[in-house]
Image 1 (cartoon, rainbow, N blue to C red):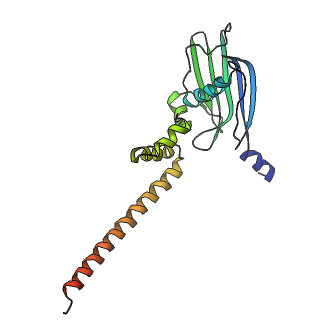
Image 2: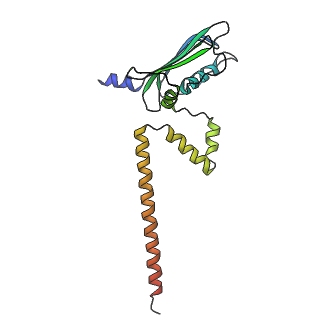
Image 3: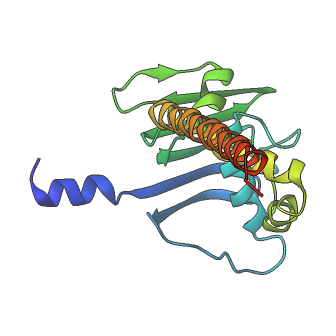
Amino acid sequence: MNKEESKNEKFCELKLKFHNYKKLKDNSFSLKDSYIYFIEGSNATGKTTIKDALKSLQTATSIGPQPCTIGEKEGFVEAINLVGADGKRYIIKYTFGYGKSKFIAINEDNKKISSVNEIRNIFRFTNFTADEFMNMSLSAKGREDIKKIFYSILTDESAKEYNLSLLKEKQYYDLRTQANLKLQSLKQSANNNLLT
């Protein structure tokens, strides 16, 4: 792989396609990696629909009883280059119509994944607002929940490294505790054996 291919591999565009999905009849968008996007528009033009579609794809969950544009019978939402929790890129498509819906993900090796649980595991989506996240940090339980959230999105390799670092941290804590106990014991012994 040459330098340009490597650059293109690292910074890919997320392509979103909508066909008869709520307010989005036939629309597509390209979003560049590492950018923050704000969606601006009048009421009822599809801003929330885009957010809901991304959530729906990552959770493999239909949002609302009728995703079709009014007057239409079927449609789809597709994301190309949607990054999973494993750091890999996926194509994921949500098709719906005639009272049925289906989610399909395709990994980098062109393997189709149709199990809803497998798709959910790929993305490990957690739903909370920025305010809710910040409020979690105000309590010990909330901070533990934050750790669990970050842990849940780690790749398997990173999770192993994290677990090893926790073990090392506990070992160092135990060694430090033992050393402090020994030091206190020696101090006590020294104080007991002082000549007066």
